[in-house]
Length: 202
Image (cartoon, rainbow, N blue to C red; front, top):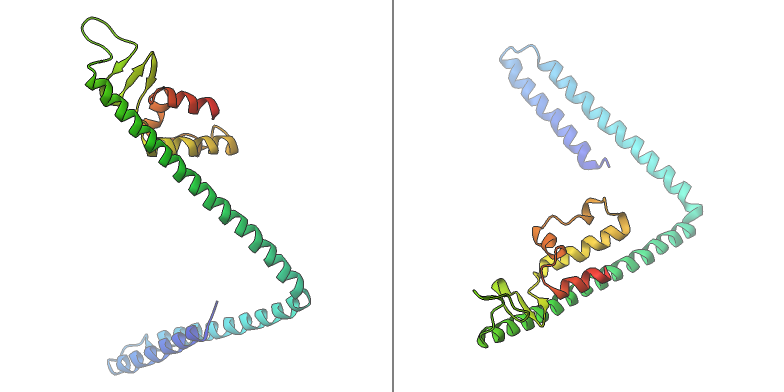
């Protein structure tokens, strides 16, 4: 968009070129007039472009006028659909926040159970055997053969988003392949029974 400021700047450059020319002529430079003429031509080109732009804008307003009501209706339809997208985005964000909150509660429960098994002196394994119930390293535990363990909040969020991308855009889409190694650990069973249940409903 060419504005009056652009024209003022072009005219300022012409004035500056002339001032440089006056100084240069005193120093007997021979290329000064060419430089001045170049700036004059550039200023004229900007003015001509501004005139063409103004004519085009005026013609477009005339062309749009008979369709004003329809254009207003079209814009209103886009405003409505955009609002639907915004609400959906907000609901999706709230759903992810709810997911993270639920996972924090689960991880806290797993930590409490792990601590209790440790207090009871029930390790998963010792020099004699590996047991069906007990606590292990990194928060891992088993109760009657069912494995449990902590799940990183951000890794699970990445996993859920990747699953959505896979459903919508296909498994080959880059967004459907989470890069975080912890996500791959989840797919291999880290987190125990919780992870298995999540994969079952994905």
